[in-house]
Amino acid sequence: MSAEIKKFSQAAAPVPQTRADRLSASLADGILGGAFPAGMRLDEHMLAERFGVSRTPVREALRQLASTGLIEMRARRGAFVTSVTGETLAGLFVAMGEIEATCARLCALGMNPVERRRLKSLHEAMGLLAARDARAEYADANRDMHHAIYAGAHNAVLFDIAIGLRRRLDPFRRAQFRAPGRLQRSHREHELVAAAILSGDPGGAHSAMLDHVHSVETAFERMSLDQGLLAV
Amino acid sequence: MSAEIKKFSQAAAPVPQTRADRLSASLADGILGGAFPAGMRLDEHMLAERFGVSRTPVREALRQLASTGLIEMRARRGAFVTSVTGETLAGLFVAMGEIEATCARLCALGMNPVERRRLKSLHEAMGLLAARDARAEYADANRDMHHAIYAGAHNAVLFDIAIGLRRRLDPFRRAQFRAPGRLQRSHREHELVAAAILSGDPGGAHSAMLDHVHSVETAFERMSLDQGLLAV
DNA sequence: CTCCATAAAATTGCATACATATGAGCGAAT
DNA sequence: ATTCGCTCATATGTATGCAATTTTATGGAG
Image (cartoon, rainbow over the protein chains, first blue to last red):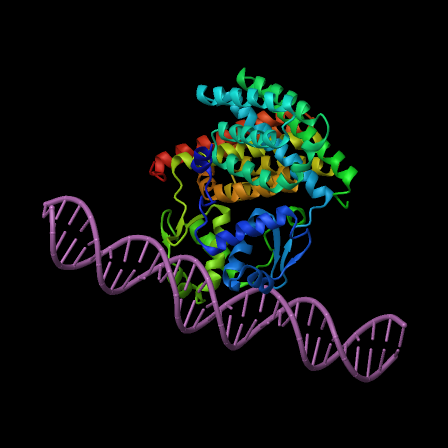
């Protein structure tokens, strides 16, 4: 898989060589992991001291992160962790669903035999994981499956867009697999998507994927309501 | 329109306040205008001297441009103007078509009466321009029309993606309206898109928009073959 | 007590200087 | 003649210092 990602991805360097790149990755982890909560002001001096570097690579890392949507920069006012309101989150889910549905449609139209076989075996492996209720492994396989669909669309631009959206949504997706019975339901939805793609049904793949992402969003909303994750 | 853009757009500042922002805009213009040809190495010292600033804002502008796909940065090797091969250009057109088709579909599902009326009047005005063969004005109105469709999807993420793609394709779209009869044909295609949206036919809007973008791509390919624009 | 104006502090923006890696050029050995 | 390896110039990466702007604090007037 990593070869495919590397082939398509334009921006991200495989091994971050410069301090700014490493910082960018660390900051992204910190934001996604919750160390830097939404809305927090990211002071350049503080970050420089915290990571033991000067302000220059910090500034470049911030510029880089701003382009991913993780932070927001306002001239002469500093960088802020993007505060995700319920509205923007819903917008992200809708966009993700549309992009993934588009990829699925293109997969149904143009996946080659090798890609189809891989998609099928991935899906079947996930069935076993779902039966065992192996959540962590299922989540990993789920990521691979979705990436395979992005790649199967055979379009570098859509691939990058999809990867970027997924990165932004990742922190909010993590919780949803904890819902009871979610794995099995996710797998049933995948079944519809995979079947439509493998049988060459573009319209079916499109709507099946839309349904799936909508279901993920709903599962997330339930979890967030239960746990009070979102202050909407 | 500008209010709508401002409302949805996240990143771009309306008035570039910092030198890095101004530089970023200037460099983008230079690249899109042909002053910096594809594949050219963008030397930081050269740019700093050329624009009368230090390397620091130049570097920040380059980072910003890298995220738009206009240039490509390799660690310790410098920045290069992205060389658009025929393949990547085709990928851009496909992605643009899919995104625009998705927006059109969402428009058909959710445009409000005000937006519908505006879309209709924009389309009708373009009919007059096409009849007069007023190419420059038609191109402007065409941009407004497509922007109205992006906005009508009611999704900030998709809006930003669509605007970004359009920016990247802009230099290649300019020529296509010079093809004889292109305006009239473009307007007939718009007719199908607008009718489907206004009648609330999501599937029809989707496919009509896909057809339209494909037609734009074809027109561009003819022009570029005639003029030898692309060294494929 | 509230509000506004002014000034001080803090933070970002920019410039300059230094460190380090890349790649071109040259020379020697095979 | 070709290739390998070394040296050195050049360009990028990083650090630091100064300037400009924003924000906060403070003092006085209403």
